[in-house]
Image (tube, rainbow, N blue to C red; front, side, top):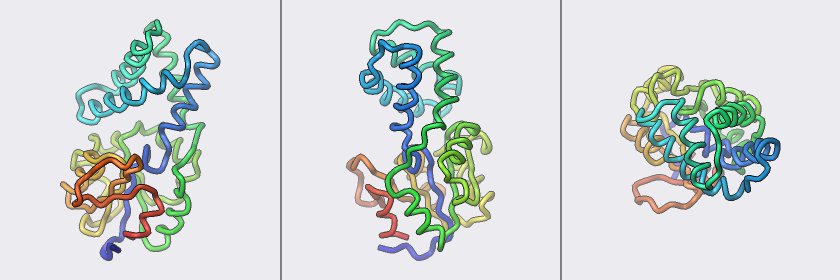
Length: 229
């Protein structure tokens, strides 16, 4: 069913438009090939993905710092595959990862098509919890920048989604009204519930087809947004 009152569409970036998992795996493969060739990338990624998600969850709610996130997700992943690595090596890998990650810019299928479609009738924006410099480079390198009128990151707002302050900040920056705005993202709590709690509408990008309540608007592919907007 089409939503008729929307003027402004807010997107999450990672795991919604920018294919974080694919780009991350390619980055680690490049790093390990050069410095740690004995590591099997598939084995590492199998452990890293859930550990990274758990660390981001803690970071999202200010239970760990930026530095702890970057260290813990690697240390815990190396421990999980029984690979001995020093703190100095972890710091080196972490820095190289952050530097190289935006060089890989795979987007989810349909990204440009849906942005071209939406751009004709809506103002488009981004709200991201990612690190400001890294997100800026991702957006520019993947040729997304020209689609978005505003980009709000958690460093600008001083808080992370689902904190209502970041949504308020983004709305003010966009000069948008919450009753005419919608948030699209892959996180049920940070993107969807965070937006709903603030009075914005929301659509869950449910690529993995997770079971959710019937009250949640959801899509499994970005082009399905045409059913709503």
